[in-house]
Image (cartoon, rainbow over all chains, first blue to last red; front, side, top):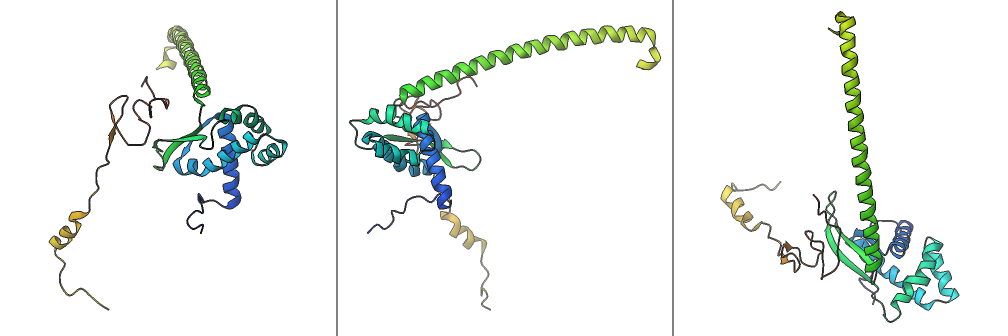
Length: 174
Length: 61
C-alpha cells in the first residue's frame, strides 16, 4: 500500500508546483547551492537526484529526458559534463540539506540544499562575491569623498556669493 | 438553551490554565564557537555545521 507517500503539494496547483520544482532543480545544478525553505528543499531533493541519475547514465535518451525537464540547455550540459561524473561511485544521496535560520517575514524555517562535493566551487563563488563587495565599498567610499569635496566647494562658493550679495542689496537678504 | 448553573470562579480558570505554558527549547552547544544553538541547525553565530558547512556571517557589523 502506498499510503502516506503522496509527497509535498506546497500549496500550489500541479502546473505551478511542477514549474517551480523544475526551476529549482535547474538552479541547483547551475549554482551548486540554493537557499530555500526546509519543506521546498525536501520536495526538490528527489527531482535533483533523478536528474543526476540520468546524468550518470549519460546516453542520448537520458540526455533528452533531462533536457525535457531542465529549463536550460546550459544546465543539461553542466549536468552531464561536470556534475554527474563527480558522483560516479555514489548510489544516491547526492545532496545535502542543512537547516539555517528562520525567515524574518513569516518565520518559515530556511535551509540550503547543495550538491555534495561543491565546497570548492562555493568557496570560489564566495571569494568572488567578497571581492565584488570590497570593490563596491571602495567605490562608494570614493564617491562619498568626492561628493563631500564638491559639497564643500559649493558651500565655499555660496558663502562667497552671499557675501557679495549682502554687500550690494542688503534688503533682499533680510 | 443550556446555561451555566454556577458562577465560574477566577480560581477555577487559573487552575485550569496552570498547565498552559511554553517550554524552553533544548539547545545544544556549537562545537566550534561554544555558543548555545538549536540542534541540527547551522550555528547562526559562527556559520558552521558539522565542521565545515560555512554560511556567510557578518563579521564586520
